[in-house]
Structure formats: C-alpha cells, structure tokens
Length: 232
Ligand code: IPE
Ligand code: IPE
Ligand code: MG
Image 1 (cartoon, helix red, strand yellow):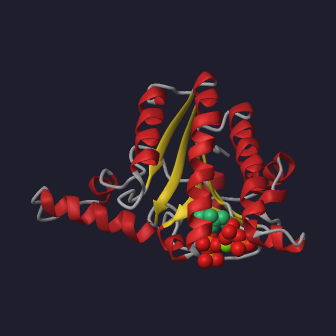
Image 2: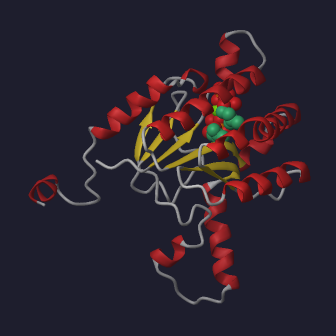
C-alpha cells in the first residue's frame, strides 16, 4: 500500500515536562529532537510528504510566555537547522494564516521557503498559525474574489493551503487524544488515523515505524467493498 504523505499532530509536550516536574517549555525543547527524527525517518524511507502541526490558530490563547517561547524556538530552529535540511534536498513550506506572526519570523520563513523551493527529496509542510477551518474559509474567500459562481471539489482543492500536495495517507496524533483539533479537516477525509498514547517527546523513529507498520495493515476501501478490492 502506498504511503506518500504522513501528517502529524505533535501533542503532549507539556505533559511530558509535567511528569518530570519541569516547566512546560522543556517539553517543547525535547519535542524538537523528535521533529528531526520524523524528518530523517521520512528521508530514509522514501516518504514524499510530511506535514507537521507545529502551532494551531487556537494556540494563540496560551499564556503569552509560552507562545513567545515557541516562536523563539521556531526562529532558532529555522536559523540553525533548516538550512541543513536544504542540503538534504528538503522543500520547506509553511502553511497557515501567518498574519499574527512577527516580521523577523516572517522574513525567515520567506527566505527558507525560497531557498528550498526547488528541492524534491522530501516535501515538508510546517503548519504554523494553521487551522482546518481557516484553511477552508481562506479558500472560500479567494473563490469569491475570483468571482466564481459554482465550483467542483477538484477546483476547490486548488485553493487550499496544502495544494498541490496529495492528502495525507497516514495521520498520526500523539498523547492519547483522539481528536483532530482543527487540523487538515478537508484533507484528512480518507486518512488512516493513528492515535497513540506516546507523548510527542517520546515519539522516536521506532514509534514512527510502528505507526507505518500499522498503516500497512489497513485496507483502504474508499467506499468500495473489500471484495471489489480483491477482484481488481
Ligand atoms: C503540543 O504539545 C505542542 C503545541 C501545541 C505547540 P502541548 O503543549 O499541547 O502539550 P500538552 O498537550 O499540554 O501535554
Ligand atoms: C493541537 O494540540 C495543536 C498542535 C499540536 C500544534 P493542542 O494541544 O492545542 O490540542 P487540544 O487543545 O488538546 O485539542
Ligand atoms: Mg496539547
């Protein structure tokens, strides 16, 4: 079964830290290691697309200190690590609203996107200031601007922030929650969803492999019957 696109809701950093009597932000710092693991796993295993939910639009509601720590951590990672990914042929793209991001981060984002735009080894999307409902609404608003009266599903797709990437085949959420928390609502319509109790800072390459092995056992019917799939 082809596994082309993995999407991950990286959750549980705060709880990981709390268990160790550390401040929540220590969990975010450890979570960065797992981001590197996930990217390496995808490069080494020929996964073409990886989308990581790094910061949701609803996450602005968190305490100001935590939000600014996360922004600083991201800025530091772009500066220190993301250019190394360019050498590995990774295309980096940020998807989300972005209107509330500060100018320093916006400039960094634009630069890394430009530098890596022609890379083809792994296509990495970082969902930042993203939400699935926002994705759909911004699409609708652009459709209105284009003065369209009616639209097909295929045409609608072109307005989504993830276009032209395919939908995720495998959607992973860590930390034991079994909800999507407003992530890729349209695009996850036929994703295989893997919910694991592992907290994101504990989600090693081995855990990623377990998720992928689980995916391989799924029968993706897309509305058909099992018998139809066996016949074809
Ligand atoms: C995910 O971990 C990281 C972000 C949402 C930025 P959390 O910070 O949500 O960790 P928990 O869910 O509180 O454990
Ligand atoms: C989802 O995690 C967002 C990210 C992983 C970036 P949350 O921790 O914000 O989700 P809820 O609030 O538990 O649904
Ligand atoms: Mg959480």
